Length: 180
Image 1 (cartoon, rainbow, N blue to C red):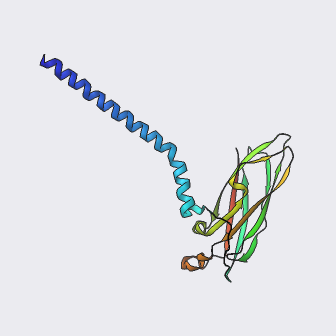
Image 2 (spheres, helix red, strand yellow):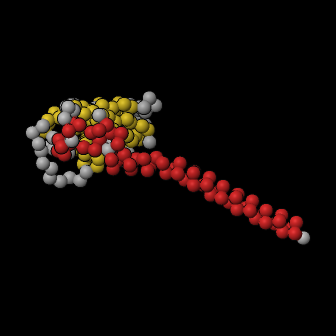
Image 3 (cartoon, rainbow, N blue to C red):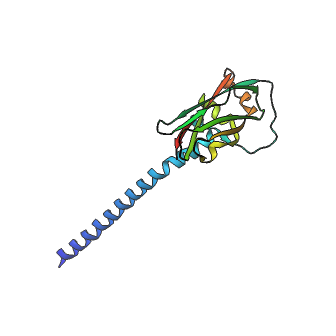
């Protein structure tokens, strides 16, 4: 009879271990799915990796220091869209600036696209603030349509307080366009 109790106790112990392992696997799968959104939130909050900031429209002071902002774009090979980036802007830090990218659908079918973005040098991500941007939402281009896609941004004047950024005179805002 004692042998039966030991076997029953062993089965119960094995079940606990099995449930524990299933829980660990479920947590690992959950963390894998959460990793990308959590990393994106981290990058947006800190500007890490050149991730720009999202800002509300308000009064921003300007400073005398000027900065050039260059604009670039890359389109996935399987996306039938032509993108023309905005022209380089040179303005005082803190000034709100609107630039326009131009997108053309090269097909006879509607095309949906989204754009991911960053700035270089990456250390400028925390100071590059977008108020409005086509990149905040999915864009649908009608067949053979050409659209203007605006970006309203400013550079935070507090970047002038960071001595490590004194030598930076140019920033590049880069968009990568993907099918959605």
